[in-house]
Length: 322
Image (cartoon, rainbow, N blue to C red; front, top):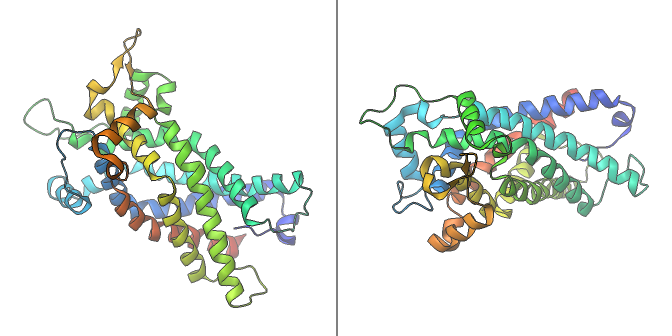
């Protein structure tokens, strides 16, 4: 990903920006279609940590029950929001990662063609994650709420034929908690994206450099399998870095649906959700470290091929059209 050269130096900045956004969006969209059933499983496992009794015994049980009770549409419930989120997330990550690298070069007075050391790449990656978290939190709020819709007890004995779509869920969240409520769980997203993205890009760059050194390559272009392998390693690193922050975020973003008594009504009669650190303490008290890592296994398992797809596509598009 760190590929400053004469071609990039002479390429107009607006063209480079457009390509980063386009390539990142395509890579994010394709990977999300593949991984969504596993992401849904992760959110449902995370959201039950504070329940008095668990709905699911584990990831396989969750997938099986979802398939049996809700069918294929259940496995892909809430997909539009994650696709939009993946496109926004990856476009923002790759674009801001490159621009922050250029900023570091200017501040440290390094030439534009100079490859940054790993610690500076990690710093640029952390900054790109922090920026992206602000765009991502409202989208993830809608996604998480939609993914637990079928877990909420219906008002009657029959299951509704249709469930609220993403725009209805978004509007409901806005009415319930106001504009700032759309960033419910942002602390968790910020922690996850900042630390996770630093681990993601740094791992990818490090593994890619080892692969290039292994074959004594003069070119910085990775072979397709090298992009996929380094991306797979990066995917595992991203989720292992700060997974509990994501668990707390998911619990907060689904609390109004699954545990309405966990919040309160403020003076404007709007739902006031529990705090990040309050939810963290409750989850640790309820199930300890195990609860904070609920869904981690299936998340790491799906992030390995998903991240491989992202970098395979992004590097491939960059090499072909960049």
